[in-house]
Image 1 (cartoon, rainbow, N blue to C red):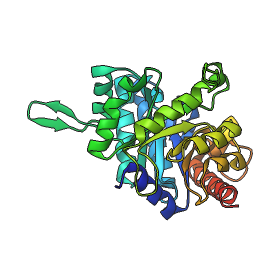
Image 2: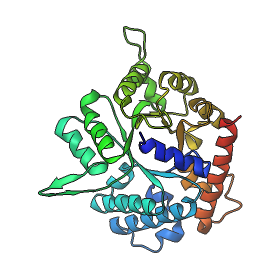
Image 3: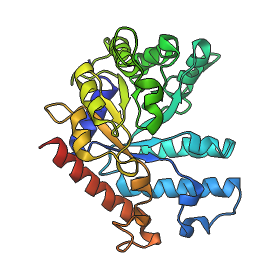
Length: 309
């Protein structure tokens, strides 16, 4: 059976690049050369953000297989921001990139179904079903158990989509809850990993990875190594590389002996490459997209060297 993860792996292999660019644009990140074209209001800010996103997609679509827009950075602008999120997703798909909507939803019943309808399923109105955002993958919070995940599992099967469930996240305080030990001796993140295994056992594709997979942070390499053993069918969405301190040699622990098993997110280090010490003397602000491309190639090569050696 082919699933959404199979298609993503095919794209990763074709590009030889296990990278996803996170599109988390704050207004203060946007280069002045873009902002000066638009009014300094909500509508103008969103137009500037979309031009920025579009430029980054144009610079990387032939070398990076996927984008990951974090919806909070769009919702903060209200309806105009949601329009920008939708336009960004559509444009990335038009350029052949897979879209991972970083939404971290985690509610139950008809509420969960509504979220699933919006992002990976369809919204029925009378005799017609409408695709709203129509992204390829979503991120989900499993705190409320299977009730918050089941609608997404059903829609993944029906529409050929995928999901990444939060298992061990990259943030500093993740251990406050995720590392707590239960009476059986397992940590909460290990218990969630077991649940994800169970939820995804009927969605395993031809590479041996499930469409119901996991978010595993690059900042905790020992836990990543453990989770690779616990979750042999778990394809990892790996945040924390770059600005958060995750290293390529640590990330390699999340990959299997064939060099597959995950996709590594970088947001600020790619989006703002033109400001970084590595590239600021080579690229001007107006060349921000070229700097992002250069950093994407450097990141690709660094990751591949670590994963394959």
